[in-house]
Every structure is written in C-alpha cells, then in structure tokens.
Image (cartoon, rainbow, N blue to C red):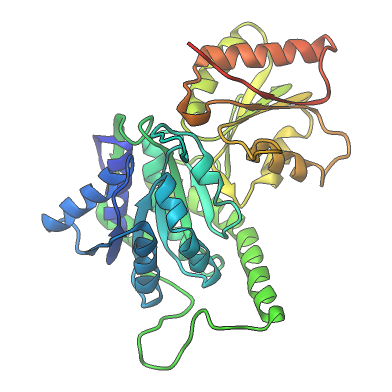
Length: 394
C-alpha cells in the first residue's frame, strides 16, 4: 500500500502523471487547469520527475507537441479546459486518427461566450466524435485512479487510442480531499514499458497524415470503431487488475448505487453524482425504490452494461450537464439510442438538463426532481418520454 495525502483534484492528476513517468509534457495555461501542469513543472524542476516540459504558445501547439513526441516513442501528457480544448480540436482528431497513445486531462469549464469560468460538461462532451476514449471522475481519488489507468488503456495493443480524463473545474480541481498514492515501484511494474503501434525515429521512411483514397480512409476509421469496442473489455480488465493491486475497483464503464432492487434509476456523470446519491438516500429512506447509475466512461458508451441495469426498471431519469442545442442532453440521446437496440418498449424516460454554466444543483434539488418524476409516473400524469431544462435560482 502507498500513502494517503490531501490533494486538490488538479494535484491528484499531477501525482498520477508523475507515477506514470511520461517523458514529455506540453501545456499552455488556462483556468481552471493551470495548477495541473504547474505542479508537474515543479516536480520536474525539483528532480522528482524526469521529463521534458515544453512550454508552448497555445493549446493547439501543446497537443501537437505531444503528438510529435508520442509518434517518436515517448509517453506524453497534456491538460486543458474549455476554450483551450476547442483551440486544440484539430489535433484532437489527428491523435486518434493516427492511433497515437496520449493521455490528456480535461478540467471542465463552460464554453463562452459570455465569459464563464464555472463548470458544466459542454467542453468534454463536445469531443464525443473525436475517437478518444473518454472517462469522467466523481471525486479526487477516482480522478487520480482514472488518470493512471488511462495510460494502461491507451497503450494496450487492442486499443491504441488516446484517452481523456474529465473532472469538474473548481468543484473537483480546486477542492482538497484525501487521496491514496500507491507505491511507485508497484505502479511502474503494472504499467510496464510504453507500447504503441509504430515509432518514427528516422531509421526508415514513414509518412503520417498523407493523402489516401476514400476507401482506405474509411477502413482506418472503421478500425477506430473496432478499437472502441475492444476498449470496453480492456477498461474492465484494467479496473479489475487495479482493484487487485491497489484495493480500489469501480465496476468498469459504469458504477451503480442501489441498482439491484431499484424500480427507478437516475443516470449521471461527474462530481454532482455525489449530490445525486445523497438525494437518492433521502428518497430511499422514504420508501422510494430508486438507484443511481453513474457513467464513468462516456466513450466507448457503455450501453451493454446500462441495458443490464435498466432492462427491468419502470423509469429512468437522466441528468445532463450539457445540451445539444436543438435536441437533448448528450447522455440521454446516447442512452435512448442504445436502449432501442434491445427493446421497442422503453421504460418511462426523462431527460433533465441542469447545472448549465456552473449553476449549483444540490442534493435537495435532485431529491425534489426525482420525487416529482416518480410520483407523476405512479399516478399516470406523465408522458412516457419527456425533456425538461431545470433552471435553479437561489
């Protein structure tokens, strides 16, 4: 076993990266991500981490530098938020299309305009079509563990895709919690040497990103889809291995709370899941048979696991902290589309969009919203599927 220390979410990411021992870190500062790479820079300056910190002029260059270092054989890491993530978006696609193992932390912050530093999930879910494996933590310990596991998953030959780890700005990034840091040697043995599909070291001619015929490009994109399917198994294996070695396992792509006997399931992702669980505890104390299914990996989307949880429930209420304008919340859309592959009679489905732009949603808010949903289902006062944008004002 390792040691337990108090860390912010940002520093939890940095300590996990330190244990993974990347050779190259490239980053550009942006609130609320900056403390991640500031801490890593401090570790490098103090000789605690043998890595090269590349201080670039933009987020686009940060991921471009990581991409170049990765294809040359280096284990790499970067981090960003919001507008910075949008600025590097071109190379987000490059990294996955070139099947490059890279790990990146996304410290979520609302996309402007207007200027906003508070968190929702809009920047993170905006990347859902980029070909990255995407995980999201609920607390500092899970963020630490997800970051370590990301290197293992990204470098697995069955996957060879970049991985992003999400955490809410300020709610997690600047909040201090106890985090258990495992033994460095044990982590090193578990991660092993870096693995990647090819290396450009100048020893022989090789090209990346050249013009291809449409059929060849389609085949490459299809291989990314197959790798995503493989990632589902790899994620579960890594979670199981991690649990045996370090004493913490989370259930793979999803995590369930009171799901076994639940007639109603609330679905969420991220830090506000803790408040949701508190609200559900109060509901259960009043006799409401409700549980929580938390999305830990948004890509690949865990529809098989979700179906096992939801196949016999009466109602599902999905909380999205992002909106696909003109449609619904992204998690809800993916869940309904996936469930339709298994059944032509969905349970009562509700999509609640809330917490947008950092608006605070408390356990009492979750309690009231879920109680109203269940009461209306039980009394026949609700459509089978409905959408509601809940605006909470104090």
